Length: 242
Image (tube, rainbow, N blue to C red; front, side, top):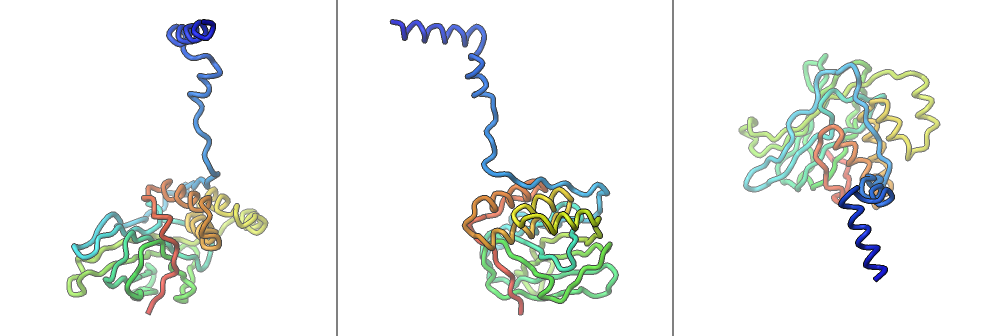
């Protein structure tokens, strides 16, 4: 009988005045995030350029999502030879070409074909492998193209982005030099250095492929610039060329 009276009083409290405060707090308190994630702060100057292409594309033979892991504005780096990352959701046997252009040069800095077939997953393009060094203050464009029909290049499936190397204050350089490796994505993201934040968290994933924490951090970065979540179970792969 006592238990029934207590239940009735609780029901009356809910109807007249809502849940008791300690229960209401439990109902309204947001769930804490499972891991801390970097927060990307885009550059204030609103640099032009940005991500192109992307989305789900393909042919009856190959259907996949091709995405350059770049922001919708010109992404920044403080590195001379940063890696560039792109994602393909399914493997393809079609030729895949990489192009990097310098607006000051009449011809592309890099124009090469990747070794086929290209597996699904996140891929890294390492500028050092192609002898490319970025000059400060120049907006370089880079593209990945899947070529279903070599004779009809208008059918290419294209994704790309813009990257610019900038000079950063000595204070930021000192902070980078003294920050533990696992905290670097946070430092770079806060400083608006997209490519460096993505590169360092991807390096952590490469060093510890089973780390769910680092994969969640990368997914958070991608979502902050409107990129779709990649299949984090597919692994990261350097891109061989021929």
